[in-house]
Image (tube, one colour):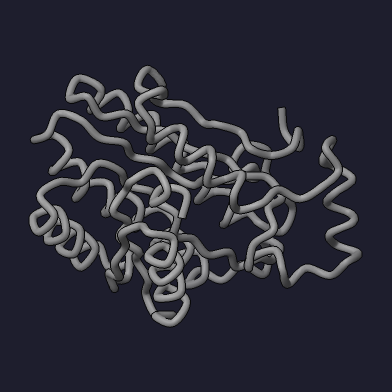
Length: 225
């Protein structure tokens, strides 16, 4: 919504929940913006690269890539299953790398582009019970810094955002007690909103952020400094 409000033609990726993705498209179009659906599983690198390449070819350009797909399977290390660890890495890390590879190919020809990764505060500070998730989000910070160095000469900036405790579907399943406990670690004393994360994305995608690359923008209410 935030990108569409600023004139972007938004391509909404989904893997299985078409209804929710279509709601986003309808919301964008109702507000006078442009959007469309694109179904593929980021964990399937070949499918992800093919889908993004086809969109870039059809639309004639690809200016912004937001790598936001992610899952969390929480649990203490001794209960962590290899298959769960592999699934988290496949979606959170390998999926983001595959999408970036496809997008950067197009961006290189245009000699401009913005790649933005949604990491997490736990990728910076860690969190008990989230070893695999924290590892995946920390990995994205290394990916962003490496790609920033690789493609700066082509006019492409690559950055990450590390959200803190944000009111999303992922946190909605927490109990009131768990939420209260987490908020004690947030100096601003409240959860963040999706709009506040969107504002950070819009900024990093804007011309005003043209001299920012290889950075992690903390949007966490002071949870980690």
